[in-house]
Length: 134
Image 1 (tube, rainbow, N blue to C red):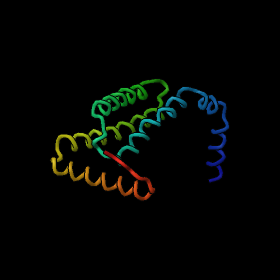
Image 2 (cartoon, rainbow, N blue to C red):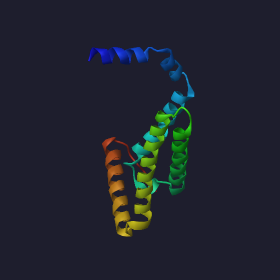
Image 3 (cartoon, helix red, strand yellow):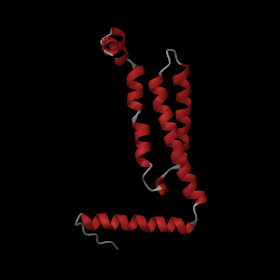
Image 4 (tube, rainbow, N blue to C red):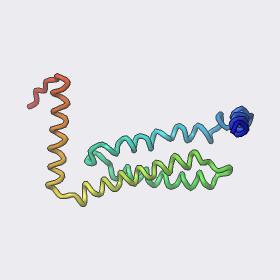
């Protein structure tokens, strides 16, 4: 077991690994992780806010960059993982969009909006804010 740990530490201290950390093969995907993380965070929000056009565009974008990450030499598996995660998140958002706008009945939409309004009013009352609307 200690031989494995020694080997891993040796790999981490190598010149090749340090060069990898300073390359676009590393920092490009790291910067890109904001997109799938935002999509995953949005999965709990109300589906009425989902943009179908943007979800479709981001889904195509991730498909293209997954292909790029696979075809570029050397293969960029970190970029591939980032865009695979984003593709899954965007497909989830797309399914929620289609369900909300084309499958769900009007009664269910109104019920969802009532629940959202109750939740928001509870949050406003809990924070001791007063709302004087028209």
